[in-house]
Image (cartoon, rainbow, N blue to C red; front, side, top):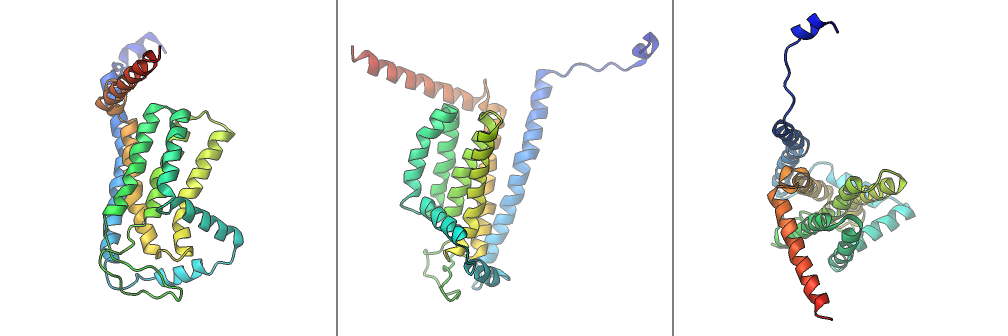
Length: 260
């Protein structure tokens, strides 16, 4: 470049840290919050539809096809997924996973995982639609009030618990076969959790689809918070985490000092 060309080139000031932070927030918002809003809107729309007195078009045929699959591996996988996410097993598994996530990924990841898993409890107290479970002869019967199955707690559990583990592993593990295996396994569990509910005749297809549409936005919002400046050094979430760590350190110090 000649001297004349360099002098004629307009001056471009270096990007400041503030400008970089603003661009980061905008990019993360488009990447996570916009899809969350779209999926949530679709979930609300589908929820309104399933509150009717009949199945949606295609649900009966899809249920018959999935329930009629005669593959022993697929049936075993469905039974396994049903076991790890049923009411009696899911809380126990979640408690077991807490220290594993802590040791593998650290305190911040533990907090994020704990919040994500705890949100699955909302399916136990919030009922969005009264729908009966499929009968062995695929009939859609009347359901008693407050005994519906929408959304599917199993699917929500799969998304929030195993989906969060997939994110943490992708973010915090070194690239390689182990990370790929962990992320892949977690995503397979999330994806297959839906069809398995239909195969087991515990849900109709719309129940499963609606559960994904309602659960994934919550997972994306938590990921956005984790990647947002409020959770980085100087942010208020980061400050809370540091305060919790200081309290934990003081408690541990007193416990060990009292032994001497």
